[in-house]
Image (tube, one colour):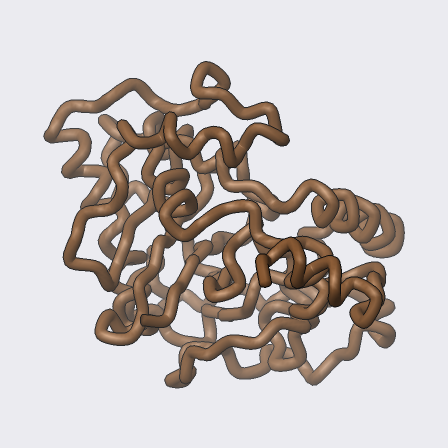
Length: 280
């Protein structure tokens, strides 16, 4: 049975709700538009804006976001309250065996319906790390499944790593590449001895973005850099890459990770990493 046939045959048995989607809803009502290879190609294209949610799921997210903004003022206002608590809102699970990197509670447990007063996270202590790395203490990190995942295949987990510690930092990003990173973001790949898909293969993947009207001339990315600049960008991403390799063991997982540039960040005041992970 094809994926589309599966979706049609199961639509009646999986009611379509509102708010955060369940895994069953994602599989039946919002089937993946991208393959694993297409996702990796988009990540490596230079324009992370190519990564999209299902358009119908985006409409559902927009409606949910309106309610959140009316109640709390902004999406960013609820992130510290929920993402740094053990009782996260996500309805989606993960196959990763966590080794203690998810954060312990910062405040007492709060259920969504009980959240009437937003509480700020306490100030960072003076001995907090200057920038995010593989050794960042777990109390500064919250790892969850993306409540509103991009249009990824069902075998791909879309995980968010929220952190109170900056990822973009002047110690990692010299002035010569600052503008490039601020436009393009950072990205990388783990768990595969073969190189990621070349940006030159992007034209073959663009038909998957047709319903979003994306064409190569609409891409937003920096001009091709020098080999020296490329190496500096790679080094700037090493702390994140090492973190990802530590959590998603390469013998078991292949990943494509990225940190959106400011122009694409949904919550600019709180750093986070997207990880697409495929269990081998």
